[in-house]
Image (cartoon, rainbow, N blue to C red; front, side, top):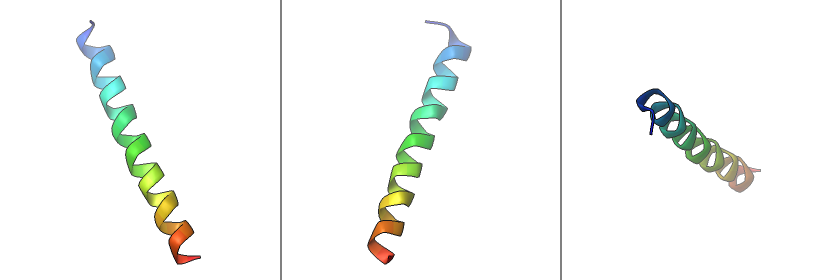
Length: 30
């Protein structure tokens, strides 16, 4: 697997996890 592609996928996964956590936190507060 390409190292650059792996880094992009890794950052994308982190972003999705953070975004889903942020959305669930907003849902709790509302």
